[in-house]
Length: 268
Length: 319
Image (cartoon, rainbow over the protein chains, first blue to last red):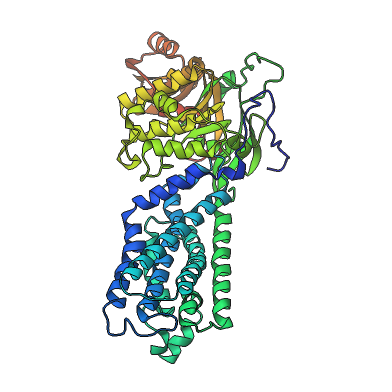
């Protein structure tokens, strides 16, 4: 449209008609989005049941479970890893809901409402982060009942870092949601996430792996976050590389999401 | 296309006030997808309170035009205004809402939750119970959208569109896939709603629907408006008849010159004459020629479209 079009409403039509604040973002919307998420059994199994199950299988009742791991025991170390795994699945899945909603034509329907695209993405990310928090909280609750021990500051520190850091994967989810127009987006990226988890050392300590594997691992998206999240427990300060890793991947995924998002909402 | 010019330049109905802003104003709207010229310059003004049918065969450019009217897509050339505003601004103000053909629903929400969610996005809305009653879905509020029938989903879309109490309601082939009863019930709900003075524009490829529910029919084909008038005016155009007779060695020039004749075709010993005035063709054939076995059949809408809207770009080529 080349000519300027008045955005204000001519009084003749209906002077009382208003545009909602905050691009349409509101509590009812958030509440209903969370309800939808909780209704999805597959999401709940992947983001809550699976990490707890993995923790119980690999972390409890083993000869190494109660060995020292810094400011706590090995059970706690595995618990943090599994909580990270769960948070990664939850936040990616939450972000990737975009794909499902695009394939069902819901995104298009929303364009016939005052909800702005930016507010829509904010809702998706908020929900993804909420599910991530639930995933971490449930895994930590399971750990506290089954022999995971850490100093109080380590409980708080590891959980907070794992949660905030999983924003990287919320961005990854939104990016994939726009990149892959499919209802089964999580089935497509699921194996990729498992690979990220391996390379991040969540399933097996990286120092038990070969040199090449360790070198490659340093450049993958879970590596930095895993180093940072375990830090309050192990007491081993992560190197600059870990911080750079998180920042760069967050920038890559958020940038990718913004790029696809702009293409998607461009008026064609 | 002599038949269309009679109604195309129909003088506008008296304007209620000098300051009345058109509900819809499309000017020189053009849109192509690759080499397909979906919309080739549509001009259309809809006055507040009108019920307009956008009638045309599949692929005429109806949906493409509606998408531009709703701000879902951008015209290559020309402008679309809704109540004098950019369509997207009109959407944000709740002035225009739409019932689309398919999609646009989340299967994992219930019907009422879908309405709650939609309502939360607007600044002011009608009560949810009211729109459910008006759309005839008051009894299925707790049903998951995925479990609703096609007709129920369509009524839900209608209820969603009613929430902002829009000045203009746009429906894109809203009864596609519905059975006869569902279609009738749906239109009854729309009609009741329109009685409150809402402007309604709907796309359809059923002449009966356009005839029964619209004050004005805009006939589109090949991305252009080919006729625009009251239901009876447009109906007269599209409901011409074909006269068939056995007449060897017919004088085609004489037949072509008869009033109302649109086309003359010879098939062996038979001659087929498409005409808006079948009576005078029949009279001529029976009195002035040796024609026999006369048959008069009314044309279907599709045939009428073809005769009315022969693609001007392919003229001179064999199609």
